[in-house]
Image 1 (cartoon, rainbow over the protein chains, first blue to last red):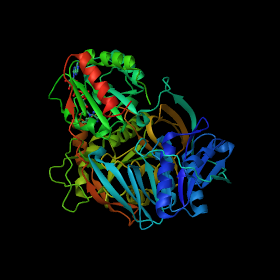
Image 2 (cartoon, rainbow over the protein chains, first blue to last red; image 1 turned 30 degrees about the horizontal axis):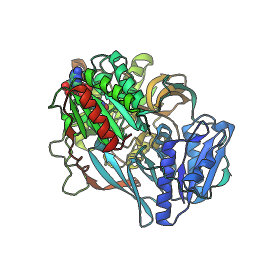
Image 3 (cartoon, rainbow over the protein chains, first blue to last red; image 1 turned 135 degrees about the vertical axis):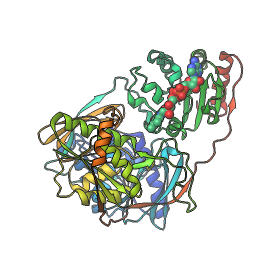
Image 4 (cartoon, each protein chain N blue to C red; image 1 turned 90 degrees about the horizontal axis):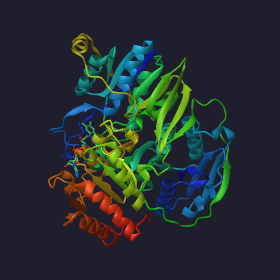
Length: 323
Length: 249
Ligand SMILES: Cc1cc2nc3c(=O)[nH]c(=O)nc-3n(C[C@H](O)[C@H](O)[C@H](O)COP(=O)(O)OP(=O)(O)OC[C@H]3O[C@@H](n4cnc5c(N)ncnc54)[C@H](O)[C@@H]3O)c2cc1C
């Protein structure tokens, strides 16, 4: 069996989880295996949505003790489910929770782990992964030496294709007892917008924005085209009040949106490392020699303070929004 | 309080990646090696805890002679002692976690600090794997850390915000940018480090997890084009192109 750990948000399957499930279905078909979707929490209402993406089996570990995320408790749920079902592949999306729990579960299972993968295949019944290394400056084909193989899938890379499966629900025992650590509180950012790592369109600003307050014009463009705003490290470190969570690059977020619009960003190697996986790249820069143009699908040489508002205006006129 | 800081030596972020003749590793020619930036936050945090409440800080790195540079730097910054675990430090996270776990066991560490990711390998896995192998608590991608009496309280970055994780010590905590601003080594620190020795230990044998069987450069991006004209004209050609050619909208 291929087992995919899935996350619910407000009772709905998170998109990165749907992508991982969908890829799991493809791998299960390719290797004649069954696909299981695994959920944990105080309530797993909404887990049945996994059937839409081809789950043969939907496993739920429901208990009041699992209401808050706990690395060790969740790792126990995952590892126990793998053992109970004799699964040979464990997957999840490379979300904050996935990246926290999956390596812990892998170590419990004595299994090799490939994180943040962008390609998966089954070779002789075993998982094989392709993953970006050196922040996307190279890709590593990764093979496993262990009977159980574990991977997390990078959000926004694998399509979430609907393919109905039987989705038979089975409940699992939940761990009890002392957990070593637990989430006590969630401090949400006010905006409520999707995270950069999951965004389909990103409008990013660099040192060329000159001031944090000027990011307002990027917000306006992002709102008009259904995107979210990111930044270069130079902008984040400039003391303009931009949080590090906005930083794109080798020491920030690595993103792979459909569209990345870089405004006043020169294209330093560490920035490119974080966004070169974008499908389309637009560069707006007044310096025609800026390295970012080497990467750009579309380049605009000009003053961003003139071009960006025009883009917002034109987008509104054309009635463009997110798909 | 006894704190271990694990440090990984990685290629500088400026490195132009070339694939070695074996087709599966990085060509080491012209590569400048540095301490992984996230590990610097981990070390700085350990030194700050030491300054605040008193602690013994031990720096550890897995590798060969080359990683002594990383350890010397850690000693200059304020680590009390350093351990070189002789073993394959660039290989898979599971192997490295096992080596470090074998060293750590029964040494009475209260806290193990590491970077949330070793840049280059980009696995972000060693910390949680180590925590599991040691059977202790973990908190990853931490931007704030408070140490209590046998407990910790950490703020960790998640999608769209952060969350507060509380747990028991000992624990493995992995640092994110924003946790602190690392200091530079002082002349006094550098001089003091010269007198400290690096303990060398042969790493325990491990069960391998995953290995890289091929390394390749990303495919070339198709050539792009520049959009000409006044800002308004550039803006409308861009949106047309994104709509009709790229089909983004
Ligand atoms: C260890 C390490 C890690 C790093 N990690 C990251 C990372 O994760 N992410 C990251 O982004 N960087 C990172 N950096 C920093 C990186 O090297 C660059 O310094 C940084 O990306 C530069 O940001 P920038 O492009 O915004 O600024 P600059 O390089 O200063 O570029 C500003 C650009 O704005 C243009 N401009 C100015 N005014 C206008 C205008 N009115 N209209 C249009 N264009 C204008 C200029 O022509 C210029 O090209 C890292 C560096 C190191 C050493």
